[in-house]
Length: 182
Image (cartoon, rainbow, N blue to C red):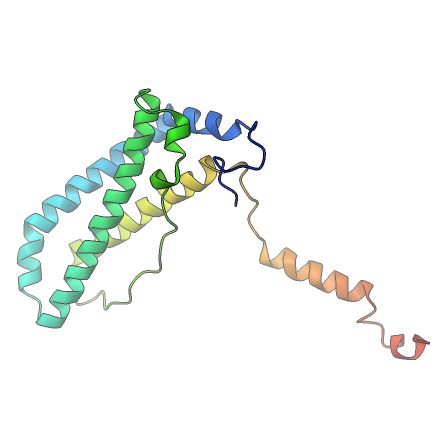
């Protein structure tokens, strides 16, 4: 996908309209409230009961706990920063062009770390899941808002059908095609 800011066609303004509409929407307000509440919930758990939970773990699991809690914190801070930028656009504290700068964009989510969820504290695992969910939604909004046009999703079934059609049109399924080649 091509960034809207670095578009080959500088006259396109669709992305700016989308960003402004989204920033002023009820959907954004709900996402913002959810994101900030999750930041507060995570901080409260990690600074309170989470400390007690981590002390109950053996050394190896305590390291896994520390890594997971850092991932939660990082994801939430990145998502919260993105949300604050969008609010700044809405409040006209930041220009939409500035919000489209690469430094305010959010990176594609990485793969989750493998860990035995059954031995980790359930509240931490819930925060891992919820922070990942929030981050992925923010990433999808970022990708949809700050590109020239949303790219259609690749349908693997249609891709395979197209390959079969091309093979059929090329004679791949014609058993007599071998003898017709002259």
